[in-house]
Length: 389
Ligand code: HEM
Image (cartoon, rainbow, N blue to C red; front, side, top):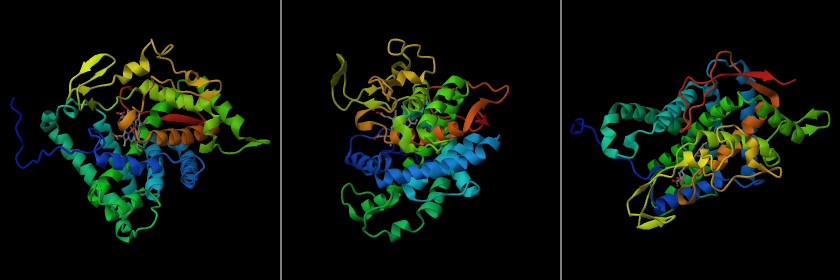
């Protein structure tokens, strides 16, 4: 075939988005602006507010989850969305709000699509073959934008007046209104905001996969429960576990990392911007470099019984320890800006769920977790949540 344009279609490939950015001033600024929000330091006001937010949203989840037999993934995604929107934009929505539910579904559809790993992701001339999908994703993206403008941003941009920004929305508004370099408009700022709010889909999908691993590992669940009980025991009762207990729960943290390891989601490819060598191999300028994350996470040379779910491989001397060769969030200038949010939200939700329940299989369900990508389809695993005695 010769690939031809469809009449009236503009094939301008978006640049400067999450993947494929160079080390431009714009990318550095975006990372810098995010840092305070995605990596809040322990015991600061931001951290405490995030801890409270994760606790309060998880409590709402706990009430609904056990009796919600149909689509637990959507409920988990909504919880993550509220945590993200609450943290970055200071807004919370009801789980009954149809516009909010639709926004979460739209993000999830886009997340599923971008995680399919098409050849066109790396060979843009193949994009016209994905015309139908693009049209669909475009419509989801427009609906998301309209929700964000009418329900999240409202008049905040117009009202913002050069004070100390209180959340990521104000941080973006301040930059657009006051900073000369790198100049970007409010529309670009909204894309940056959507990228980050969209992180809730990554965490929500990952969390369902984490539960699907644990449902087959009753002994691991029991050990997590013992660990949580030991740090929350308060005389004769147990207080609710919270985010700041994380440092005392290395085994629980290990279980989260074990799921991340087994999923082995790919690392964003790099392009060499000069001739160089890696470990003695000559690399020519403009070569596309893929880091084989599957091998780093699953190689028998690096891991003992790599196919087994063993959180204890991340626990050394009762401390959480990550081997250096394990790079699930990449590294260097392109490293993941959301990895702390993943750890915080996953820990907050998992520890509290297992403090109250044991996750059991639904009869006849096969819990084989798809690997190589974080995304799960819309209709996916459901679980039984059995109250602990
Ligand atoms: C389990 C969930 C997640 C995994 C496994 C993951 C993994 C990754 C990986 C492997 C990269 C590429 C790093 C590199 O090439 O060195 C990346 C980039 C990135 N991630 Fe994540 N991520 C997750 C969740 C999130 C979340 C929740 C957010 C947002 C809050 C986020 C924001 C980003 C951003 C902004 C980049 C691009 C950084 C840049 O290019 O400058 N990620 N992530």
